[in-house]
Length: 232
Image (cartoon, rainbow, N blue to C red; front, side, top):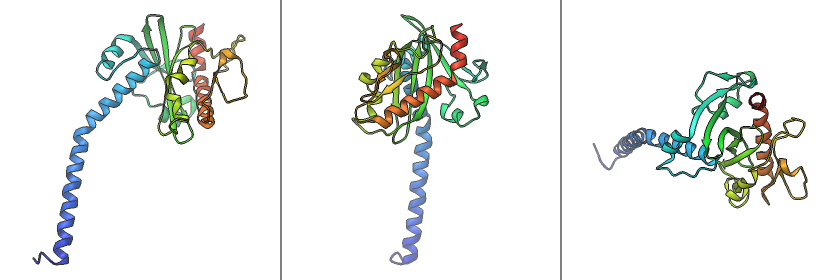
């Protein structure tokens, strides 16, 4: 075959493309278990962070096993159901009819007593936002919060994952004195709301702040029956 001809060039290029694709596919398959493990460790770190427990990639699994004493899923009626809390994907559950949704719950034993960790998920300005909220045994007072995002603007909406934004959630309550679920308002400049049910939003990140407010309202509403049953 003429090595200077078009046919040879085409065959050579095709073979190289196939070989490179095969190598990349093999590498991807080999790395997939490690990538999945890293995702699981990060999730455990985030759950622990919501109960104010600092962890690293090296000790997160050990701390999680020690501190998380129970995990299960509930339905919108507040009843425990069949399912694995850790692997339940809230994004997929949100796509279901309300009566078919499964909602994860994690119970964590801390120095301040038993805490209940609830995952939350919503939409920011540029993509999904999510996080974990921990509640005291009164099922009303927030013990800690941890939020994250996929692509919010650095210095603006991305600040939802910063300590200065997360810290003020501690001690806030999600039910009012009459027992109504009011969630937490995330206030933009000039807005007012009862202090016990609100935090300041992010300057310049109004859409992300309001997306987070809606996320909390929607997800606390889904867990409402569970929270009421636990309170009683």
